[in-house]
Each structure stands twice: as C-alpha cells, then as structure tokens.
Length: 112
Image: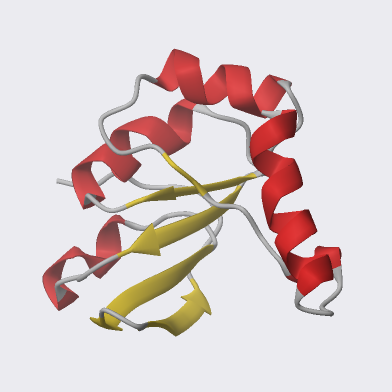
C-alpha cells in the first residue's frame, strides 16, 4: 500500500502540486469486505464503488469514518440507497471526471 500511495505524491511533486491535493480512492469493485477492511486497518479512509448494490452491502460492514465515493452513472431511482455521506463522480468523457455532488445522510434505513 505504501508503494501505491507514494506514486501520486511523487507525481504531485513533479507537477508542482501539493501531495495533499491528490486523493487516492480505493475502488472496491468485486472485492471482498475483508480485503477492504485490511486496507482500512492499514490507514486508508477513502473508498469507492461503482455499483449501488455493492455499496449498499459493503458500507454498513465497514467503519463510519470512511469517505465514500460513487464512480459512474447513478440512476435517480437508486439515490435513496445512499445512507452515508458520499461524493458522486460521473465520467463525462475519457479525459475528465466530473464531481456531481457531495451529499447524503450518514446512516439509517435500508435499500430495497
């Protein structure tokens, strides 16, 4: 993990940006909760999913201080599934990602 986290910091320095301005989001697509927990236990706090159902099942099993990101298309009828604070990133082209929002209640309820 240290090697992975060192690369963005190094790239930030080369581009004359602050290393703190770069955020590494660990995308848990198809990964087991136990693997995400290992990464959390190693100190990482920024996680993401690109499938609503995976987010709904994994998020309640992990600590509340995780900063969640949703990457990809989110149908309006699935927004209710988010019971955590989250950032939604939608890929608008191959060259850019656009932040769509930062909202959502912290906890509670279930998705159907």
